[in-house]
Image 1 (tube, rainbow, N blue to C red):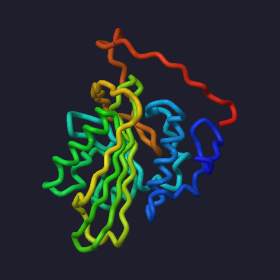
Image 2: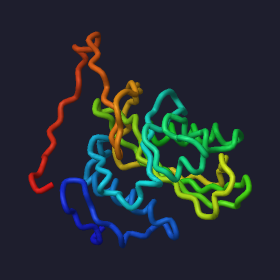
Image 3: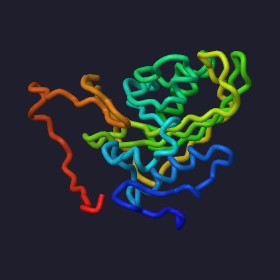
Image 4: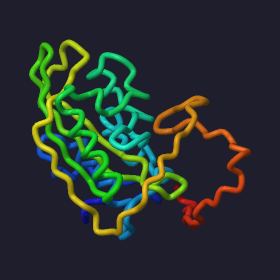
Length: 225
């Protein structure tokens, strides 16, 4: 990590980080996530700054856990739209895969959320073009402190051709983090308001849940942002 130069709280330069051979955007997203950990267990979703992964944004995405084995795209880069041939935001991650692989993808998602763990997947694609694809899944905490978000990156090599593509899972490697497992409580957020970059829609105030206990935490904000 000596090639990472921190320029503010969560904007980093990592152009020399190339551990995923031939899939540099995955390396950049993973290095950014590791830098945010900074000796802790899991970063919070609110800490993600799109400037930190600017050159990988078209391949990046944010997932929200809805039910066991199901996570939908809250934010998706343009490359994912091209693979699907439509707006990918709001779709479940399993929709990118063939029906035979969807149960396995759901199992991987649960390991990432529940263990918690990171995952790296390799895939192939067809539908008029031969594709080689890689994906990484990196757990995030929500504002409430539960592990119910994922920062991910999906990149394919080869001409996309006809869409939509349904990827075939080849391998999935899951690595448990060196931290205690966290209970998962899915937090469903209403999709309202305008979005730009990696901004998510604001969650309306819930009067019925005004007495809900929220975990407290302190966060250092530097003035040289």
